[in-house]
Image (cartoon, rainbow, N blue to C red; front, side, top):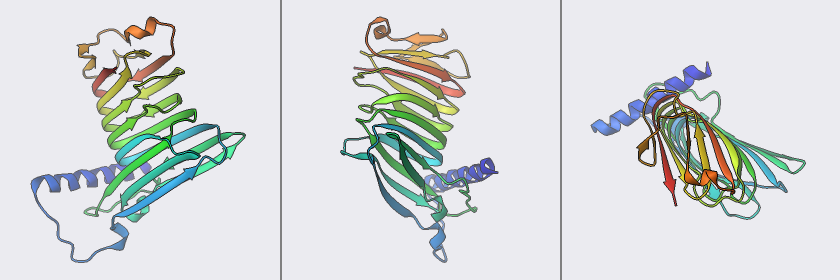
Length: 249
């Protein structure tokens, strides 16, 4: 049932984009408060947590996720959404020093044909706190900028659309990641000077490029992988579409 509602929402969003591209305009005879565009600004304090387990789950829309330097803050976010029942659900609790943060689109995110549809999230998570990060992304575009974020593990499902995950920059510690790409384009920005390995390149359908060259083996590593520093070890479950690895100095 949830999948059906998400599919309807995705279709409505696609229709809205098509109308904008073709220059057509739908005239509202009466504004409906239930479908008005709303903005939520949300801040979650760490409340003493020294480790975070963070999950961001978005069914349909545009996500920008990055780090925040604000002391004592687990997350800040700006959410622009319509209809009103797409109000994001934000939950946080601390137990024995671990903060569990959940940011998700409601399961009952239904939409009627021709309703106004918008869902744009700008989420910023604590940089200096070790974080196990889980991403569940549906239909849309996502930019996940984890430069400077102390990631201890990453589990991401990218869904349908275009996703960029930036893991570049200096790393004091390595971590393991699992990334499941769905349908569309996935770009991984990885540090040139930190060891990185991606396993699973031969799976799925579509092209796989690393630093401008086609990858034909199942496992790809950068030059720093053979060194003694921290390592980023990624297991990739490919779907259909393009995967690109960009090495960043």
